[in-house]
Amino acid sequence: MFVFKANKLCKDWNGVTLFKNVNLELKKGEHVALFGRNGVGKTTLLNGLFGKTQFDAGFVQRFVPVDKWGPPLLEQELDINSEVTVMDFVQSASGERFKLKKELEKLQTQSEFDMERYSDVYNKFLALDGYQLDQETKAALQQVNLDWSVWNSPYSQLSGGQKTRAQLARLVLQQPECIVMDEPTNHLDKESIEWLESWLVDYSGAVLYVSHDRLFLDRTADAIYELNAEGCKRYEGGYTKYREQKELEWRTEETQYRKQEQQRKELMQTIQNYQKWFHQAHKAAGQDDFARAKAKKNVSRFKAKEKELERLDQNKIEKPEADKKINFQLDDVQFSAKRLLHAEDLSFSYVKEMPLFTALNFSVYRGDRVGVIGPNGSGKSTLLKLMSRHLTPDQGCIRRNPQTKIGYFAQELDNLDDDRTILDSMLELPDMTKSEARTILGCFLFSRETVFKKIASLSMGEKCRVAFIRLYFSDANLLVLDEPTNFLDVDTREIIEDVLVSYDGALIVVSHDRYLIRKIANRIVDLGENQLVTFDGTYDEYEAHVQNPDNVSPNVHELQLRLTRLMGMEADSDEEQERIMQEIRMIHQTLDELT
Image (cartoon, rainbow, N blue to C red):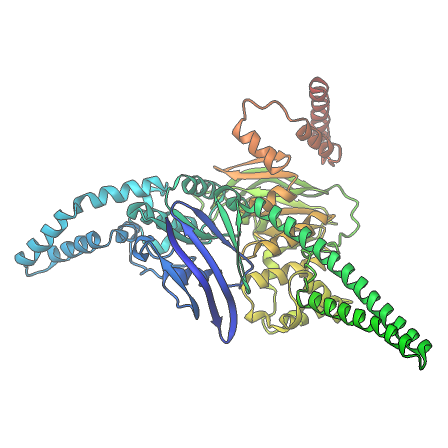
């Protein structure tokens, strides 16, 4: 049975068609993702399906009433009164029971007690099993792992991740047949995202959601609808299967296009030959009527081939557009030193009684691609600010090599001039021509008239793209990137990844985008529980190590990476040099035993 079926939906925005001919459907128990570039209208489509926005054309058949789709659409930002507590926010999903509970509380506080009204409300409350509401709410909050200490706090004071959990608790309380979610993983740390993945996998109701988190899509989506201006197409499976199907589509279209072009070329040649033969035969025939009639046969053949070419052009297959590929690299200034940065006994706190971390020691070396992970509030962004000298440590120090030049992504966003256009911002850079600027902007999906938009009018995703491009032209040899792919759609994320993979300098990246960390990181720094764990290896290797810390034997690849790093270390003292040499000898011994 279906939850809904949508047919030929169309929506205009300020006189411009946002999307048209959109057909999609959702079955009971099915988990489906809505996917597409930023600005294509995904959130608008969700709002329309939920009944909050009217479509300009098309219709939606709802086989499950909207009031059974869950509490208000799980939105990126909800307009909630600042005084509403988490408990009240969750309980409001129960509808009539919550209203009766609040009315009872109000009647109890009135100076003139209305016994008749109170009895009427009380009896209705009992009939709906109202006294179970508090217990059910607590059970829902416990199920979504929202800490009890915030249950009576204002909803507006929660973190982004806590708000998402509170909204999910409302869904648990109501037990809807369908959930509609818009970017549910935004603001969530790794642990919260993984919890949400598990929750959704076990959820028996239907789910329609928007997400740019590729690993989340892989783990939770039964199918993906790709939305663009011309319509909506369904692909079975998660993101990986979607990419496989898109690649197959592209190869098929490319083959058909080449076949069509070859056929067109042959037809054109045949037509030219017939034209040539006719003119030659007609000229040779002179006044000979029989010869002239024979020559005219080439005309009919020529006309037949022209008709064939016309039919071919009417059913023309457009050349498939390949994915955007970056054909340049982020420049790395020649750098001879092996260690770029060293943190020694680093401690920092915003509140003295609550240190974020204490006595941290680590180094960043040439060729490092460090992925910094950890729960929200563990100090990831703070650590990057300390490295880039935007904060000063309470204790300890961060020593930079004199040749180290840091490019800090978050700072680039602050440095954008709102009054400049995108193109003007590029032309401010040394030796930049208009042709080069437009080519580079095109690689980052800024094309045609878009380059003339002012920075002030850009979305956050567009500003992130501009800021990242500016890093390309910096002479940094250490890029410090704080959530560089936030607000970006998948197409842009993959472009950023390609650039970072090809970068010759060192990288330190804070991100909740697990796909990004998996693709670029060769070293993991995990911040949590007031400690720092460094791991030489990929994100997948670190995950395996965390899941089986006692059962996994020393990883040869990890040891080899560590050995390479030790061989390149510059000791600051004789004692440190001796420690390095001792660890090198131990790793050599361990590798001999393993291999």
